[in-house]
Length: 322
Image 1 (cartoon, rainbow, N blue to C red):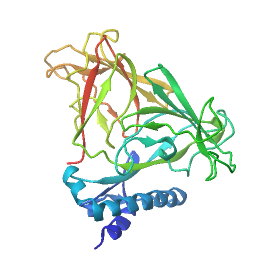
Image 2 (tube, rainbow, N blue to C red):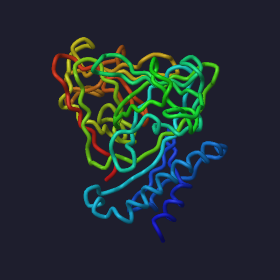
Image 3 (cartoon, rainbow, N blue to C red):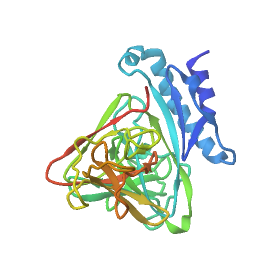
């Protein structure tokens, strides 16, 4: 059976785990997950368009990329379908473009499901934290179509807020968190992200002093501590532990249900007994009891990592791909 036909079979399969994800193996494509949910025809058709592009690229890799396969043990492509609520949603990029590198903002989402308008008030809006300026770089989904150089000849496009009316060329790397804002009048919906899984066994998130808007580099749920079912993919050895929120590293996860952040601080307390920190520092819910949190950051969710002190931290994440 050819790689192309295996991919076509894989296209019809996916795993549903809070967010909708399908993973397709370069060498073991038969091992994709369960059937797609019904009632999502438009999304599925749009997914097919994305995956056909990915299949073309992967087919080229399959023919000419056996040397590459010796560098990357697995070449995995897939997609996520994430729910968007009106107002603020915090997402993260868990994929890279097929072949690696940074993801262009125009390729970040499939066009199906996006809300286009003429300004920031009636369009979907992306805000990416710029650690250099300590401000957000904003991009809204403009529906304007016009001919001519740099115009939107292929339909709507993401445009820099306050910039010229041309498609933005910004890129972001896997592990970047960002705000995705939807106009209230548009209601809820789903959007698709797709790409290739970063091919390394580990990845490092560098946290500088202050605010860092990040997420998982890989498409996986992330337990904060090792006491969750799957443990945590993060090594927190370089995180700063303290006794309260003012002297500890802090994680803030946006809760779309409450419209507030759920905060966790890295507490250094060690004690014996049920639920205590017998194995060293742990993440504790802000305002909650002094016990190790069992909460999980869902795949595709971004979060703030607020680094305490003056030093940086290199947080190493382990890939789910074995």
